[in-house]
Length: 485
Image 1 (spheres, one colour):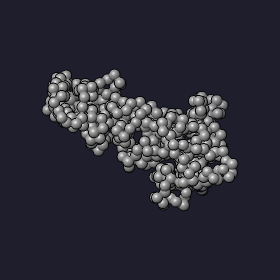
Image 2 (image 1 turned 30 degrees about the vertical axis):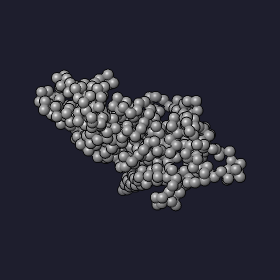
Image 3 (image 1 turned 90 degrees about the vertical axis):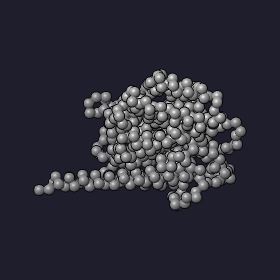
Image 4 (image 1 turned 120 degrees about the vertical axis):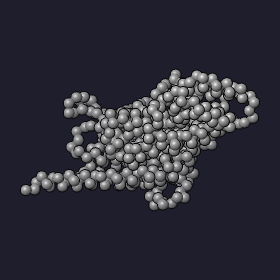
């Protein structure tokens, strides 16, 4: 909506997005901006895509009650928290969002209610719908107390995407440019290599196909694995997958946080080390963090070596050369890393614990630090894609795992930029269906939405439709056989 049109219609949703010299959080994010964002994001084009999905829900193989059993959580202004919200229809969900303008929208599991159909594949279709609107469906939590906690009428999560949450704050002990919620171009590559490691394993080790990576809006990334077999995993199965990725055994008080046992790495760890971690550690990480350049930095690494004689030998060598070197911090780090590797290589016969010491150091710094508890339980919530982060005003846009090196978290569109774009009468926040093949679209969210549609939404919908149809035909075939003489 352009300004002239808004003035002509007397529309009060028009709001200025002024140029800000010293921005504060409220300059990027407020309820007035949200009203415009949510109003425009659920436009005609989105509803057209949505209707295509809803029509599929009429297929006799679909579970018509699935939509109403998905949990939503709204965080409103002043930290008012509403969990266990459910909606019977897409329109009621839209109405709720446009009525209360939640600061944050989280998506939960699909819960059990009285279901007549055993086919839950419509979940995929609805999932995409919800992703596309930035808000997912909810179960019927309002009615959860009406169901017993034992017996056959139990209110419990029965289906949920397999999710992963990785936060840059968990790397504070190995990054020296930022801390806490702050992030910059020097430490964000830690998130990039995490995406590469986990995405490759999910596809090659587990065979998952429908995987969506999303920027959290501030300091991390979220992963949604949406394959039917992933959504129907039990908590025990989810825990097994999460533990597959566990490498860190210690806590913040342990100098040695990684213990790699045996004479060789597990194939998954070996692939991750060779393909991603080793090159990243010796390249970008050394260049950006210079982790051997000062005593306080290299002391943390020396403490990971179990042999005190080797610790003392390297420490003495580095302390003597500290004031005599004319090399840059990056060059000093690389020289000391080579010295450490050579020393360990020559003396690894002394103790079995030295055999994997180099790899343990690399894994400590570079291996993904997943919040495993989020992945283990179906009832954990995760922020909806295309939401706006209330602390930064940045949109939670999808990340292309095949080109994640190009992703810049500091260049992600903010809510105020979207409002300015709308007010200027320029590109729309969404992409017209007629323009799907136009790579020159100038909308600041255009590329993100196109990638979401082509790389995630459309393949997932196609897969769901094929599976629903196949199972329905099988069911009909068995039904006919049971009546044959």
